Length: 360
Ligand SMILES: C[S@@+](CC[C@H](N)C(=O)[O-])C[C@H]1O[C@@H](n2cnc3c(N)ncnc32)[C@H](O)[C@@H]1O
Figure 1 (cartoon, rainbow, N blue to C red):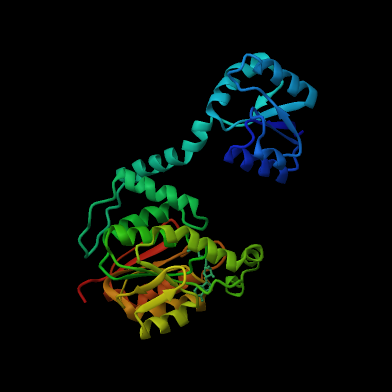
Figure 2: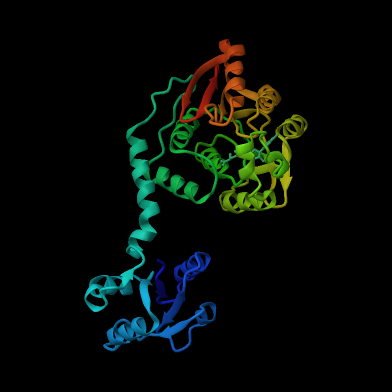
C-alpha cells in the first residue's frame, strides 16, 4: 500500500522532481519547509511548516505533523536532514521510513559506476590487429567522463559496443565519421567525442527523423516506435550534442541514400543548430545503424562504401539482432565480396566491426 509521503525541504530541485514522480504514481504528497514563505508551496497539494532541523522544537513538530497527517514516508535530498533522520527516525517515529538512500550516494552513483567501468576497460584493452598504428588508450578519467555523459543521452549502446568504439577509434585514420541512424544521439555523442579527442575528423549524422522512417517492418519493434516523436527526438539529439560541438558535428535530415548523394556533391553541411561544417569527403568511420531491413542496410553500405578511406572502419550495428537478420546478411555479403580489402573483422556485443586494409 502507498504511504503518504512528506517531502522536506520541499523546494529543492530534487524535491520537486520527486514530487512530480509521486504525483505520476498517484501518491498523496505533503510538502514542508522551514521558510516563513516558500515559493514551492503552491506546487504541493498539501503543506505543513516545520522548524529547522537544528531547532530544539523540530522533533516534536515533526512527530505532531506525522501523526496528524498520517505520514508513512519522508523524502529529503538535503544531506544534513537526511543524516539526522537516518540516525533518529527509528527512535522518534518507528513506523515512518526514509524514502531515499543517502543523497550523497544518490548524486554520486552515476560517477562511481562510470569510474568502475573505466577501470575495467583500462585493464582489459582489446588486442586488435590493425594496419593503423595505435594511439594510447584514454585515461581512466577520460573514459569515466565519456561514459558518464553517454549515460545521460537516451538511446542504444551497450557496454561491449562502447568498449569496441574506444578501441577502434584509436586505430582510426583521419577522415569524416558518418553515422547512419542517430535518433536521440547516444552513439553519435560517443563518436563526436572520440573524433575530437583522437583528432580523427568531423562527425556527419544522417537521419530523416520522421516517424515514418522508424518503421522497420517488424511488428514487435514498430509497436514501440509509435510511442516516440521524431521532432522531439531531433531536439533531444541537438540538446545532447550541441554543448560538445567544436564546429565538428552536423547532420543531414534525410535518408542515408539521399545523404550519400548530397555528400557526393558537397563537403559543406549547414543547420541552424550547428552552423556550417566543412567535411573532408572521405570516411574514416562509418556506423550503419539506420533501418535494419536487409534491403535498407544493403542500400546504406552500397551508397557510402565509395567514400571509405583506406584503413577506414565500418560498423554494422545489430549484426546479431533478435528481430531480424538484415544487418547480418548485408554484413556477411560485404565481408565475402570485399575479402582481399579487409584488414580486420570481429563481432563484439551485437555489432560487426570491419577495418579496411590501408595497403590498397
Ligand atoms: C536504432 S535507431 C538509431 C540509434 C542510435 N544510433 C543510438 O545511438 O541510439 C535507428 C535510426 O535510424 C533512422 N533511420 C531509419 N531509416 C533510415 C534511413 N533510410 N537512413 C538514415 N536513417 C534512417 C531512424 O530514424 C532512427 O533514428
